[in-house]
Image (spheres, rainbow, N blue to C red):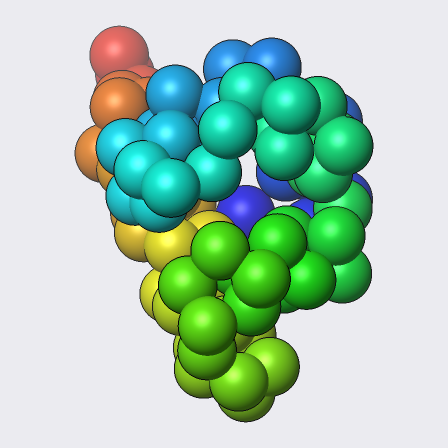
Length: 80
């Protein structure tokens, strides 16, 4: 999953974001709207971390979302 996909699926991903970063408010999530830079800024603000650490966390979360989606999608198998 890349950040364009995150932005496009933001409403579905909000719960996962809230679970990962509980200090983010619903208003924060509305402001972020799936935009990576907005998320990084809010993580820095709410958690008092540097941008590099916020980016690392966001990238790990994004990668985990991709892996979960791949597990949820059954592999295409031929019937023949």
